Amino acid sequence: MSRALATRALVAHFGSLRTTLACMALLGAAAFATQAGGGIGALALGAALALLAVNLIAALVVHPAFRRQLPLLLFHLALLALVVLAGLGRLTSLDGRFELTQGVTFDGRLIASSAGAWHRDGLAKLAFRHEGFEIDYAPGRKRGATRNRIAWHDDAGVARSAVIGDHRPLVLDGYRFYTSPNKGFAPLLTWTPRSGEAVTGAVHLPAFPMHELRQSLEWRLPDGRAVWVMLQIDETLIDPSAPASFRIPDKHRLVLRMDPLRHELRPGQSVELDGGTLTYEGLRSWMGYRVSYDPTLPWLLAAALLAALSLAWHYTQRFFFTVRSAAPVKAPMPGVADA
Image 1 (cartoon, rainbow, N blue to C red):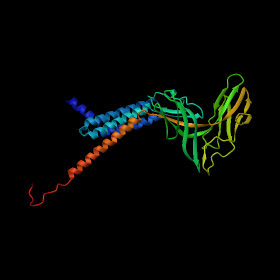
Image 2: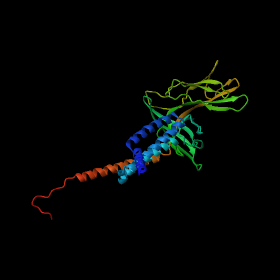
Image 3: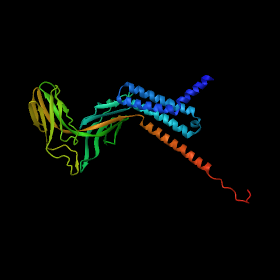
Image 4: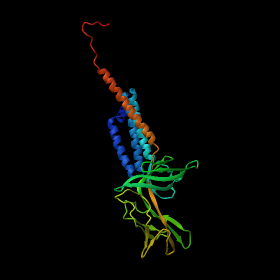
């Protein structure tokens, strides 16, 4: 008998509101530790979610009202599902960013990323080509929607194309690809050594027009030597006083500097350097992308809808039953006998 009482007391303790608040505080601390990175944060998050799930299950056992009232039972089961799904989502999710030059295919590599401990990277098998983009600007350089063109082949080998944007994603195998506000110009350079094969690469200059007056960057040749590259634009691309569109400048020069040498090149021109020839092929654009992955999102939406509907059902029942029970009973008129 004493063991049964002790078990009941332990279950009541785990199902109490005080334990719920403690588990919520632990969950917040674990989420913060997960953002900081490392395996300890993932373990802490899993432990906090497990304790919160135990707390909800114990609350269903301790409070008979939850079991007697179907709406309340559904609401707490939906809360339990939300907790479990939120934990699984953080452990299996991915958030990252990358950049693509016009005409280049995505190869699965990210500039920066944040992934859950259980995420299995599937980006390497995905491939789409960045075809270019269009952005309109209203007076005052107010940026409009991004219309970014992409092309890829589906699992059956059929060529596909689409237009995506900052809020209109491309969805491939659960990964959602969006454009970002970052975009700019990319000079295409080819290094031809005196012995060996030519190598072509793109220099992603700082975002435009955000860094309009700082269109320069240090770039390294395949042999490790640094080259300072600057794009000199000889026209106004986005006039603040009139409507405009993002476009490649027609009048521009590429300034190359390798101390003590300085060269200005136009598309198609080359310069002889120690060990080979550097050719300016032309100017393209680049676009920044965001990628996210969370397989629990549709299930989270379903659980949230179930929780909201079941809670509305519960309060609707209480409201109508309270109103009906509180309604005054009309007394019979004096001198009138019951029929």
